[in-house]
Every structure is written in C-alpha cells, then in structure tokens.
Amino acid sequence: MINDSNLRDFDYRAEAARMGPPCVAIIDAHAHVGGLKAAVILREAMKLYGISHIVSMTSAIEQIDAMREIFDGQIDFIAVPNWRESDRREAHGRGYSARIGEFHAKGARIAKFWAAPRGIDIGHEVGDPTLMRLDNPVRLEAMQTAFDLGMTFMVHVADPNTWFETRYADSSRYGTKASHYEPLEIALDRFPTRWIAAHMGGWPEDLNFLTGLLTRHPNLVLDTSATKWIVREISRHDARDVRAFFSRFSGRLLFGSDIVTSDEHLNASTTAHEMDAKAHSNESAFDLYASRYWALRTLWESNWEGASPIVDPDLAMVDPVRFGARDSAHLRGVALPDSTLCTFYRDAALAVLAEATLRPPQISPQT
Image (tube, rainbow, N blue to C red; front, side, top):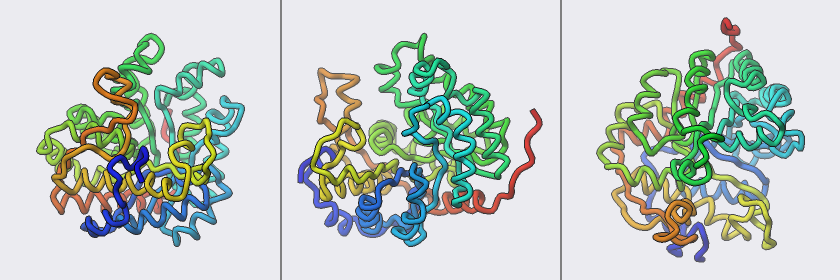
C-alpha cells in the first residue's frame, strides 16, 4: 500500500525475505517504543529484518514491565524526561533528576540529555532560554544524579543542516550549529562516563567534524539513528569516505533507527500530533516501522541506489522549487565490509550495554 513510508509500494515482508539475514543479529541502540499494541507490530518488523534487541526511550515508566514481556527481555531502557508534564521548567529541570532515579530503579542504565536547538523555544516559553543547555545548573544537577548512579549518558545536540538553513535561520536566537557543541565538549570532560551522541553526533553532514569530536573525546560513541536524516546525508558522501570513517572508528559507532511507535498509529482517526499522524492502521504502522529497517540495512549493507521509499519533507523545506512535500531523498548504499558491519550492528552496542550494566555508582567529579 502506497503511503508516506512506502512510496515504492513494497511488500516489506517479502523485501525482508529477499534481503536475507544480516551478518549478525542487529542491536537497535536508539528507538522510542510506546504503546503496547504498536510494540507487537514493531516486534514483527524487528524479527523480519534481523533486529534481536532494542534500546528504547519509553516515556511511560509504567509500561516497562509489559514491554519486557513483549520483547522477551530483549529490550533496554533509557531514562527520559516527562514530555507530557505541563510544567516544562520542572519536567526538564529538577523534576528530571527524580525521574532518572525512577528509571534506574526499573533497570535503566542510560540517561538521555536532550539539548536540541528546539529546546531554546521551550526555554523561552518558561522564561529561561538556557533551560535545555547542557551547562544550565539544573541540567548539571540531573547529570550529576545520573553520574552518581553510574549511568551512561545519551545526548541529542544540534539538528540537521536543513533545519539550520530554515527553522533556525535566526542565529541571534539559535546560534550557529557549531556553537551547540561548545557546552557538549565541556560536559564530556566534566562527566567522565560513556556518552552516546545520537543521530551520528548531530552532524552526519560533516565527517571531518565528527572525526575531530571522536578524537578529542575517547569516552564518546555515536549512534546512527534518525533514518530520513541519515539516509539523506550519508548518501551524499562518497561511499569510500564513509567506509573509511566507519573503519577508523569501528567500535564507536552504533546502529540505531529512531523508530517511534505509538498506539495512535493504529487508529483511523486523524490527530494533530505530528508523530501520531505518521500511520493510521495496523498495515501502515507496520510499513512505518519496517521501512526504517529496510532503508537502513539497504544503506549500510548494499550498493543499491534509487529513491528512498520514505517521504523526506526536509527536501521541500530547503528547496520548494525542486521538491514537493511528498518527495524522498536519494538513497545510495555504502556497502560496509562485513567485518566493519558486524561490529557496527552488534559488537559495539554489546560493549556499551555491558559497560552501562556493570559500571558501579561513581565518585562525583571535582567541580
């Protein structure tokens, strides 16, 4: 069925059979699994595409036990703020420290610190534009809580170049893209734990920048989540440069999808929420989830080249003359060699997860 996740009218179940199993069972190190019914559909897509384990930012703590049952224990959890809390200052400030403790008590060993430029807008709404910055005092308190519990840190910093060209064009409000990394680099040194920088560190457009960031900070690894963004930008690089980057930093790059599941995806009724509007039935929800695994495995494993089956609205946002609202990016596979691919798909994540599980509570760093 043609929809925004299946512009090529693929049978994603047949495509998975055609593709065959990956070189090793894949660990998806970055997802947002919510909704118990939707989770069952995601589980089918995972099995078909060779994903054996998933690491989720499940915002509803009360769903954690049920999620473990659905995924036969093959799921880990990342502490996240309560995005539904009406008091945003509390939810993203001191309230998050308490929530980190609640997640930790449920077995989560990774804490997420979201510092995307959109946080500036949230900060303005509550009268503190720096609320979401990694150097804000209340963010440092939350990081200290997670550090003292011995947790691994995940961070989202910056956003696509396409957004800095459009949504964040006002640099007096949002700064430059490079400026968002200044508090990150300070925090990486201040809290000497393992850090995971989501979405290829927020800058898949610039492998040289990422090379410098990884070289300066040996405690940093990157996940490659955000399917549309990653497909669009990795396909623009010379495949040889991508292979060289992955070879150089083998063990410090984790597979991730950034799949978001919700029971709202199974409802035929429309919704104003952008994420909930991405699917409207069991079938379209399956396409939504499976399409990400199809696109990512095609990108990393093969030399396939053609239009991605997933609508990419960033194209029209930047160049509305050339692109329409339902156009998709060009996908050009980089064909990582098996030795690199197997470490990327599984072994690097196994090491990070083991480290997060086994690390004892920390001694607070000197301030």
